Length: 207
Image (cartoon, rainbow, N blue to C red; front, side, top):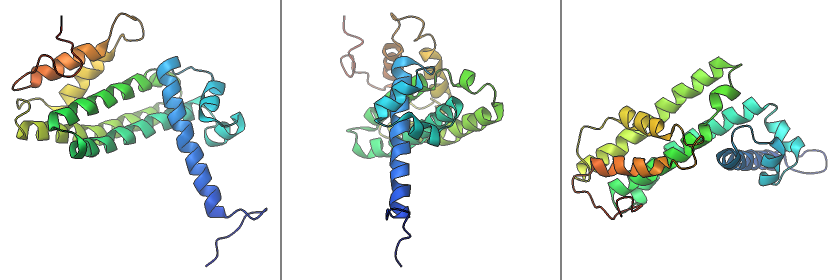
């Protein structure tokens, strides 16, 4: 059956595919801008990073809150989908866990300021927070279990505690340029190991 065409002869399915690509490009660009410039970054900066006009951005996300919520949801899914992929690709379950934690920290940085951006829409924020836990806690649990089964880390670390602890270590990053939470998070991960390797990874144990 032929694909229905829009005025001008462009297939409707192609239009939809273009719209999906534009939306994903905007979400990726917004996430990058939020990391470097904060949640209140100019909308023009996001559109420029994505290579689209402001009109295109506003068609997809009429308000800043819509954009921030969509970025949050997009990052949740990306972080959740990364876990199984890393387990399949990494040299060890511990390396998969470490790389996933790095993505999780990136996510937390992107998420900074979300509550303020959505303070007029608390129901939406509550739903996103529930989705955050429902999607990411099982992934974290899978990575921890795999690392325990491989003998890489000691048993006993619960996924919620690890995620909550990492979140707490990320607090204050924006207020103090001298503070690097990733150094402390690496120390935390090394503390889980059955046989720590002082010079592995970021080298935070080096003098």
